Image 1 (cartoon, rainbow, N blue to C red):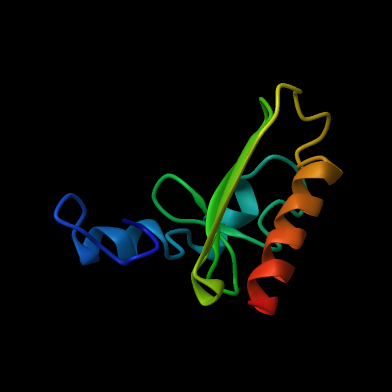
Image 2 (cartoon, rainbow, N blue to C red; image 1 turned 180 degrees about the horizontal axis):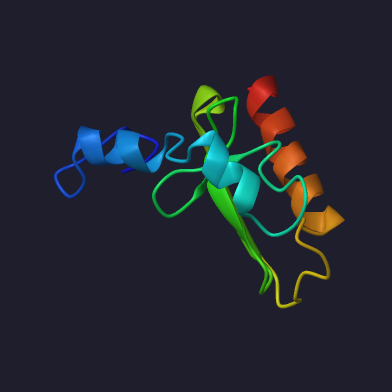
Length: 106
């Protein structure tokens, strides 16, 4: 639904709201999970929004997912290990990078 831009369940307007920046500069300056948290991302409704158009969420309990519309790609990583820092562990980053590289090669 999100990658396709809408569906009978979610309208295109709802999807645009969920996948676009909803925070003001003042909100970004006062929020996040630590200094610089909003330097490389923002917040739509219910998920992180990245400057290049991707969106998703890294969950501290060992899960992450991202939708890369430009690559027509959704990546979901499920582990059973808590994140030790606000950033996802290297395995999550590596799987996302490998999926993006593979999608570009196709």
